[in-house]
Length: 108
Image 1 (cartoon, rainbow, N blue to C red):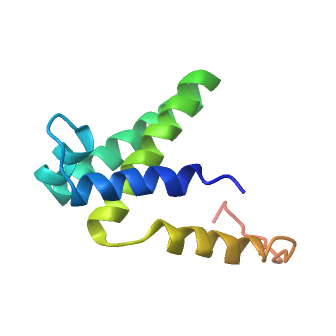
Image 2 (cartoon, one colour):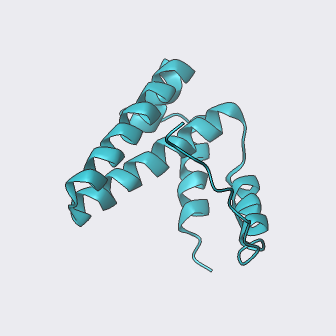
């Protein structure tokens, strides 16, 4: 399995524990949760716009930016990426368990 996400998270955690001057990650931790959440929101919006504009290169870059900022948020809040990956694995086990969707009258 690819360890890219775990490796990136390890770098984020290292920056949190061992601040380095000039590091953008350290800047975010220094500014605190509000700044981190603002960046998550901005990157979420930019990802949506890139998806709407149908440019794969832009979309890929924005998804990467969003994932990075989500990892910084997780590190700030004490949520280990291994817990997130474990939850994704748990949810992947449900694939194929289709739900019966309700037929909703959207005209009322």
